[in-house]
Length: 103
Image 1 (cartoon, one colour):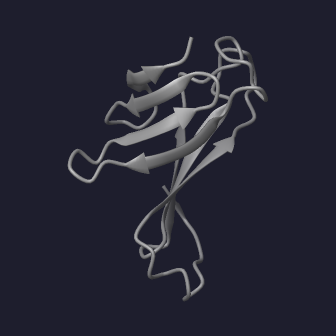
Image 2 (cartoon, rainbow, N blue to C red):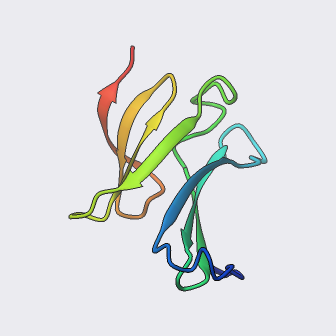
């Protein structure tokens, strides 16, 4: 968690999850992260996507396009262009299951 300054106009937003490319130091390190902004609290949490590495995916041709949070389980789900839809584990950093896998 990191403290951030939030403009008053955005402080009414509970949570914003932003998928972002992430500089990997090797082919086996995460190439993507989810930045989870808790704007009312003035905090951001960085969740490296440990499953999304250059060794496993074609970074630039494949990417995490969108994510959301399930209201009941609070787990993050999303879509990876060229790979399919997924559900993350409770830590928000690893794939729990593929909901729809592309061939």
